[in-house]
Image (cartoon, rainbow, N blue to C red; front, side):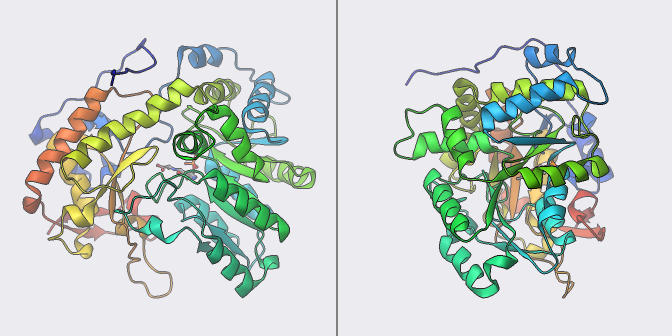
Length: 456
Ligand code: F0G
């Protein structure tokens, strides 16, 4: 097979920090062994998140200069609204400062105390807003999603049987909407099939339940459909995306991922009445419906980014780069979540460090060891992220104990991926020497951000 390269060339560069091992050791200690607390000036390759970390194109940087900063009726807002309508197909759009701003407004408007919001695995901020408004989140993702070793082309799919059971138990009138994430971040960046989206939509509509997408990584989902679902292999990602959204009533969007910008988001819907009510809340929490917490220049960059994100060459390279990293690890026998997802490679820390108890925070310890070894920064997604049970006060113990190597869009070359792979491989060879951690400071809420640890 012929090799292919990045479908872009580099116009501006940013120097990377190259610390010595001793300097990294000091930085890690200072950060309480929590990668969230390491200064970016001490990080060599930053794989903490793909959120807001994309490189913008020359056209996006050019668009920044075109920002119309009028308080009301900005031209830049019109351009963003048109881009969302063109590419996503919704009738109404409201800008928000980022994804959770849209989640807040949607949750407030649709949820009543005692409601249930089913979804395909939780995301931290999404669930927090649902719960703040009095709803219980119910996980209705297929069972396969909870097993990191299982190969399945659409591990993000919704289990219609679980949805039916919930409706049978609580009644459709207690379910204001179902939240469908495309792709599913916490399951490892796993996609939902078009068939599943279609079935879920028709089933929900027959019962009067709305379907709202968490569209954060929707272009990546569309690419997986093109690759894996019969009948879509010759369709463009942009056409597939339009069909996906036709099976929903609206969406929340974190523009910091698939819209290729550093900040921004939106709430979109087709219903006129919901739109009218959303306009009233957007002014309370975000800003005028014509900027919603974004500068005019940010809206220009996002409009341009939305069009660039559905370029077939761009998205093929994006998913290809994640796979390039993941495949090297698979080839060397490193346990990672299978199949390789859209935005990240997830190390299975339970398998990687079987000598550690869950209470010794294997994923946190592995992320710390990776930083110490090479300056590559990853993120714990396991027992620390899952927090404590509100009632019993015990640690929540999710089945998945993972370290996420998240790839920013258009930022690193495959040489950087090689460095990350080499570091993981060298740790894997001496994995028995990696010790656990104990938590010495635990914040009451969203503890993973600020918790501090020390070696046991
Ligand atoms: N939904 C999903 C699936 C996400 O991954 C995120 C953010 C949000 C909603 C919230 O969007 O950050 O713009 O308010 N995920 C980031 C991450 C933080 O690192 O995975 P936001």
